[in-house]
Image (tube, rainbow, N blue to C red):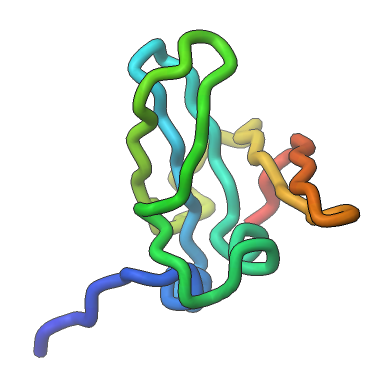
Length: 97
């Protein structure tokens, strides 16, 4: 039985996945797919999301991670987007699976 590819934020959210944005300079950010879905919508391809790095402005690599709480660092920090007045604001919080 073949598995369906995870090509939307909605599918990633059903699998309780994190979106990892990694810059070539070593800057890494994690976001819950559910938080991103609330801002961008469930039909958006998570690999097509645009993230930037304040340090060097390169191309940022996007990866989907399946969440296994027993294998994650206890102090994993995620970045959560919220939309206020049509603008997206980001804040950091501790990950709780």
